[in-house]
Image (cartoon, rainbow, N blue to C red; front, side, top):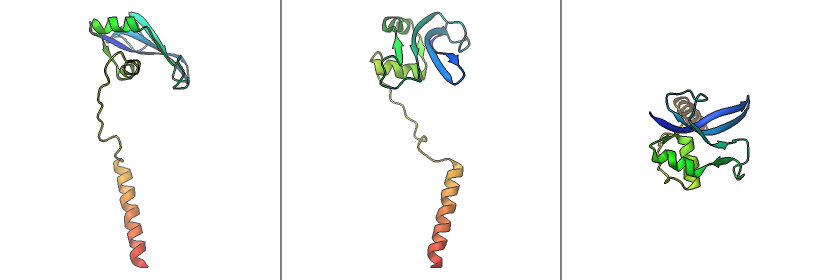
Length: 118
């Protein structure tokens, strides 16, 4: 069975509240899970200690059993010092899209034409 430590969404519309759960990866996001390991409340300020709560011992147990974490949960575990920080590389994240490049090119041509007209 492929285990995941992931977030299960709760709360009402526009008021998210997440549970950190250990679940079979084939189950639905908010479906059946084996154990609730903690909570995450994104509406609280980032420096609030109640924003992320975890049962560290149980998380370590599931990791030792071979459970994989999702990206967001892995960031929580890195912040808590449970797992080592991994290097993430997304070199295209800061590059503008195709339409933005075309707009900038058109703007530059228009500016060059205005300068040469003077």
